[in-house]
Image 1 (cartoon, rainbow, N blue to C red):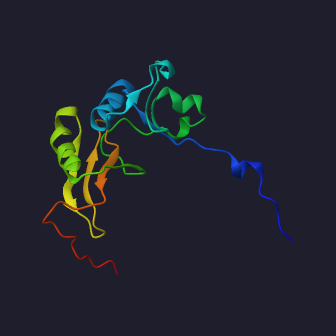
Image 2 (cartoon, one colour; image 1 turned 180 degrees about the vertical axis):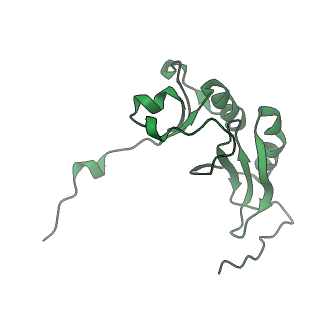
Length: 155
């Protein structure tokens, strides 16, 4: 007996990733400065901003959205030392763009956590915290000239 795929499986989805934050404008400007993505002002509100590039969107939700979405009991405390529960990753085409991000992040209110560094899988990578402590990374699938991937024991 075979089952037919539902029409749900054939829908086209547009990726939209959302970050809950205290200052939506500052967060949106931080990521816009790093990524160069366009703002969609017509979708903005007092508690929401969004950036877009090539059909992918990142939304920035103010804390009021927790209650509006029925998530009030999950709102995190306003502190900087919370545990990591998600990470946005941005793939770039050239290792120099990772290096550039490392140079620009502090002036934008972010913090470099690690990097730039070579990963065991051959990426040039930077792990950072945005102005509100959310974790992200810039990663390039090629290493800079003269840099080799380290050997790491994964056992």
